[in-house]
Image (cartoon, rainbow, N blue to C red; front, side, top):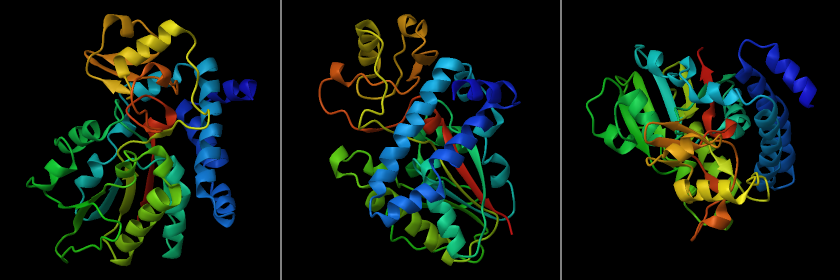
Length: 314
């Protein structure tokens, strides 16, 4: 696959398009989701897909490392909601932590309502974290602060999957920020069930939004993606020195505000001033004391930085 992958990357104006086609056309597909739904095992959809996504990105890491420059640098797809917010009518639904994995789930809900969504990708600002996204797009530290701000749109901060829209007819500019799926990632890893904690709430909230007959266009996206690091789908660190370097800087997380010259000289991290983010799907848990959760974000990987952008216009 490496030779074909390199040829595809070298022949494209935008290498990220190649990655998006593989991730959504071969890995996170409706067919694979349906197979695991029929088997009653959506955790299998997550785990199988993560191993495939990990193997795919490892190839990219080895043969086309320049791809990380695309994820880390300035890019138009990092400002994906700016134009929308200036329109006279829209419904923007932001799911905290929504990723490319959830695209088949979103498409199925849209189909229930006879809608066909155009599926594209957007990029999360680095580090791939809620506060960075919210500051870049809304000038706020997070959705809680945004809720109390005077804005030109009607804002709802959704904390329950049973939430039903309560907008008035005059609310033609609607921004809905749902805490799912990120709010469950602080649970013990064994307690997180993909169907119960991710697929179910995301689908339920979107159904309630669509049932309310929202203004169009309807745009569904996420602020950042996430990794599942269980089952051996993370990468081993090359040597003890690199393992210690990552563990000392990032502890159990994937970003830090205490970068050092030593880290900036490493190929293992993106560094900008004092900010740094782990690059690639490396795991260094053996060097970290205390709990290390399997759901992570804040670093620079395809699954953290490439997020879904689903849009219905008519």
